[in-house]
Amino acid sequence: MNGDVGETLLRCVSCGGEYKPSPRLFRCPRCGGLLEVVLGNLTWSPRGKGVWRYRGLLPQTKASPVTMGEGSTPLIASRLHKGLYYKFEGSNPTGSFKDRGMTVATTIALDNGARSVIAASTGNTASSMAAYASRAGLRPVIFLPRNKVAKGKILQSIAYGAVIVWVEGSFDDAISLAMKLSEEKQSYYPMNSFNPWRLEGQKTLYYEVFEDLGKAPDAMVYPVGNAGNISAGWKAAQELLMLGVADEAPRFLGVQAKGASPIADAVSRGLDKPVFVDRPETAASAIRIGKPVNWQKALKAIRESNGTAVMVSDEEIIQAQRTLARREGIIVEPASAASYAGYLRMLEEGLIDRGDTVVLVLTGHGLKDPASLESMVSNEIIVKPSVDIDELDRTLRAI
Ligand code: F0G
Image (cartoon, rainbow, N blue to C red; front, side):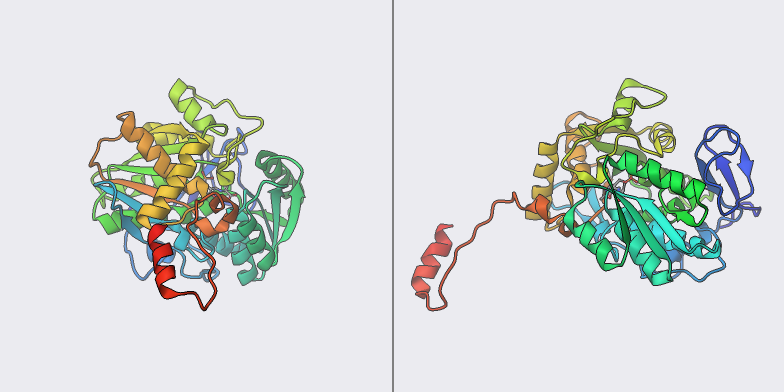
């Protein structure tokens, strides 16, 4: 099935201005708004595995894809709730959904002749970018908020050889600095999600859900930080409708942590523009973001899909993380557990019906944030190899 054949464009989500793509164009020259990619030729012809299975719905690149087989992640049926599925993005090569965008953005960076790539990050974008950049022979420079990134993600980025700039401030400070550097010094190619080419890769998560279920689910639930992923999902769902591949699109539901919830707040108060949070705070460090770059796209996704957004407390997030590990066998980081906490809250508030087909996007692997697992109650004993077997048995039964 083919859409209209035409030229690929960048379109401003604020004023609708349309522009021919060029390597350094990331903001609307007229109004400064965010841009989205409008592909000239959309083809639904899935072939092969992973992100590049959907090549017909991705930008054409001259360079061959920088890939590690990202995507094709499992859709796991819940044992606790009827109709509920988990899309486990922790099984990507660097342990988060970011790899879907990075395979595309890194390939485009090569097309554009980039040498250094930069991104600000709460951790996952950084480690993903570092991995793909190293593989492509590009120099990764990452901007991290000091003392605010989970250990596993820092070690991953170091291992992949990233240059780290520790910013004494929040993620929002780090991204403003990275944006300024890439605007003023053209030798740094930006890989944050205001780069609309990266979000094209992130659309593939939804295509996989659609193919695995054989239909659109009733709802997709995303933890929302910088708000790129939920926006990419909605773009994907609209494309499948437009091509006549799907008859329906799901509702897009966002979850934020209390203390870092400008989008959920804007939705619940019916605001056109969020009130940004100066000092975002939550245990879910990946989504500790007060000024989401993609807020316009995310509000559009939520409102046009008849969705909504809720906020959950850190206690609800930690409880959700525990339940997923102990009752479903899935370890996720706190930001990802927010989608399950949000699901429970939305069920309770009647925003989702019991039995609806709902997909929770579990964005990142729990092993990335070992400190978040330290509060789990452990059942353990220490024994000598010569321990008496009857005594060992008695002790184990008593635990
Ligand atoms: N879950 C995890 C594990 C994340 O790392 C992020 C974002 C999100 C959810 C939210 O996705 O930003 O598209 O709304 N992490 C970014 C980073 C900000 O730097 O790794 P989003």
